[in-house]
Image (cartoon, rainbow, N blue to C red; front, side, top):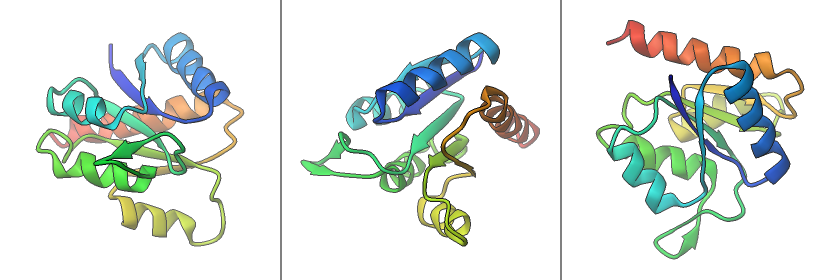
Length: 136
């Protein structure tokens, strides 16, 4: 069963992701905003993919707040995180945001919020996992 980390500060959205991914997608889901724990678990290869909200209220690293873009960069700096599929989920849906956010974060894919159809989220993660597995 693929393991997905979800980093989302909106409790209702996080619950929606968990239900969609576990029930309809067959994934094992971990919800967390604890940056130290996330980086430790990434280093332990605890996840097969990550879903990151861009705007995070409760994530801190080295005593200062960070957003999902910076968290994605921190994940990429770990040896285990270099090939870990990262999906940005964001309400920032202006023209050009996709390219800018992907470039700034090092993430693999971008999904606009709100997400109403669980299959859209599930499909994006399945696509990322398939690409990762094709590359190994």
